[in-house]
Amino acid sequence: MFMGVFLFGLLFKIGSAQILHRELDIPQDDAIGSLTKLGSTLLGHFLGPIQGDYNEICRIVTIGIAGSEIKVGFRPHSTCTYCCKLVSPHRRIGLYLHRRNNTVLKLDMVRKRGYLKANGVNSTITTVLYIHGFTEYATGVSARIVCDAYLSRKIDYNVLALDWSPLAVFPWYSAAANNTRVVSRVLAKFLKFYDATGELKLENVHALGFSLGSHIAAFASRKLKGRMGRITALDPAFPEFPLDNDPSQMLSKRDASYVDVIHTDGGGYGFPWSIGHSDFYPNGGRLIQPGCEPSQLAEEGNILSILLCGHFHAWRFYAESVRNPTAFPATKCGILKNGRLRSCAFTIHGYMGFAANKSVVGNFYLSTRNKYPYSKSTESQMFEKGTVRLIL
Ligand SMILES: *[C@@H]1O[C@H](CO)[C@@H](O)[C@H](O)[C@H]1NC(C)=O
Ligand SMILES: *[C@@H]1O[C@H](CO)[C@@H](O)[C@H](O)[C@H]1NC(C)=O
Ligand SMILES: *[C@@H]1O[C@H](CO)[C@@H](O)[C@H](O)[C@H]1NC(C)=O
Ligand SMILES: *[C@@H]1O[C@H](CO)[C@@H](O)[C@H](O)[C@H]1NC(C)=O
Image 1 (tube, rainbow, N blue to C red):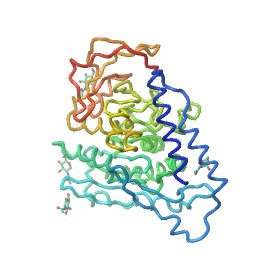
Image 2 (cartoon, protein in one colour):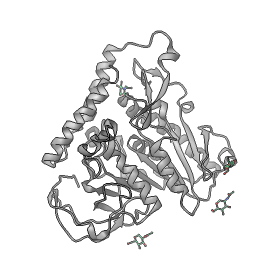
Image 3 (tube, rainbow, N blue to C red):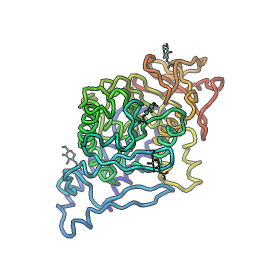
Image 4 (cartoon, rainbow, N blue to C red):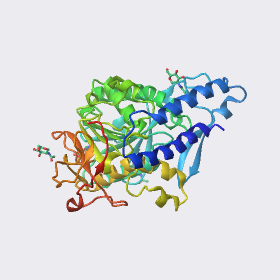
């Protein structure tokens, strides 16, 4: 039953996706967030404080589901009455250094002069910091795909992935959303310390957050006075974040020198409107992304991949752009102010992903193929007519 609420949210999502498809209209309300909040409140009434074997109840297990692995807990780890208590959160968070020889080194969130240097972090190069989303972990699929793409490049990067998996377990979305604040505090202290020791330069940090991870990057950078060089938000989480559209409560363009956003499930799990300096809307920025048609995925009998396919496309596209920086030419032409998508000649105004250029800001549109490689030639990028309402 404890998975019920989340699954209900997912099923609701399928329903709303179909409506979306028919009306081609992005809902302004956060339907999934309302459900997860309601579920969390209801559970608060049913579940009392933990009794019995605390360690057993608060254990986190990794389960294989739909060809992937997710972290699951019987209770959330957060501050609510029925939560497992979150003592010393910095001990539940880690940093994984992904290296060229295919090994991963786990670092602790400690503040010890010389620690990063001794472990091979080079202060003169760009530090890529990947931050996973709900139910994921730092050596999971999305982190590996993005980190491996960076390691395949000729020039060197410090490739790090933040692990906050114990605070992001399934099915406790509301707790995970709350925990983004806790995680960002730990991360900000860590980065501030090593910026001061000279083992890493904040200006050289490029944080890449997927879903809830985008908000962690933003909150952390905000505590560092927005000094982080770049934040790339990969379909930043929408459920429970619109919060009266108050920019202090979510990622915004004030959070780093450059904030670029890739929207792939706008109005569902991802933000439907522009919140960065450069906002990219591949295939309209919302469901249903090419290759994610329920009929197609149903054949694979994989419910999770149907529900999350569009959301996951954000890191799939990004990783491809790291390997091939000009894979995703994008144009500013395409969607008119009133939300009408029109057919127009494709002029390249920038590239989505790795090569996004901070001196060219605004909203960008492009289309992709329906499977890897997703890159589509400029010639075949004419937009189709239809209506897509996006808040610009
Ligand atoms: C991988 O590389 C790191 C340094 O980059 C080194 O310390 C480690 O021993 C290497 N591991 C293997 C198995 O080669
Ligand atoms: C740090 O990176 C620079 C640039 O790639 C390189 O020249 C230098 O040798 C590296 N330092 C260490 C300690 O690996
Ligand atoms: C999330 O935070 C809100 C506001 O502080 C709190 O009321 C709620 O109980 C928290 N939910 C969980 C699941 O931790
Ligand atoms: C970014 O865009 C500016 C202005 O169009 C251009 O001068 C610059 O060369 C571009 N930078 C890169 C890295 O493409």
